[in-house]
Length: 114
Length: 114
Image 1 (cartoon, one colour):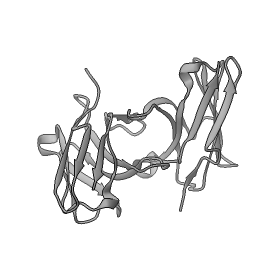
Image 2: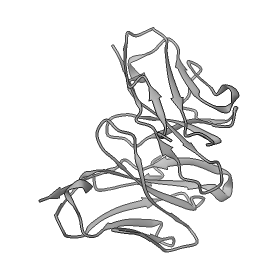
Image 3: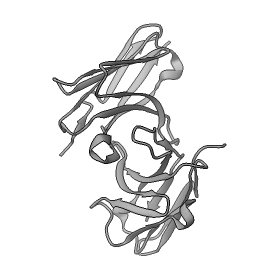
Image 4: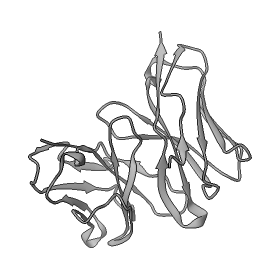
């Protein structure tokens, strides 16, 4: 039972354009969402998070949008840079329900084309 | 502060052998998590500690797996009688332990069981 889904295994975007990565979840008990970036042979690196009381959070080139009614979140990267090429994981937890463990999606491999 | 460290980074073992991994969290982080990642999947939760107390174990953690966190500092994950299906990346993460505190991951230990 995949509670967090990233339906696009890969995405290619031209350098300088916007990258949009999508994530869907099924568990209504999730109330905290995170995006991690992962390079080969390294652990996931935290990028940005959002609580369910918000619908948008921005940090530099990265913005996360949350649509609770649709159980959908997205990560926007603007402008995309070659160093953004990596695998991006969406993760969710239910912190207000005492469930701090992260449930991850299967990841989207982003390739930025120079 | 050098972040979360894990040792060894790589481990190759024969089926049936025991292996032990170590994780050193970021100092002052009360929570420590273990995850496992297999090819093409996102990390999956195994277990976590609040200081020295093991608070939750996933059903993925069979009785061949044991984790400890003596004195609430570093943690060890032991796998007894390894099987080929145990081959994976084992990731450790730590956080301050407040509800929405970010989990910071180490580089992982890649286990190969021959």
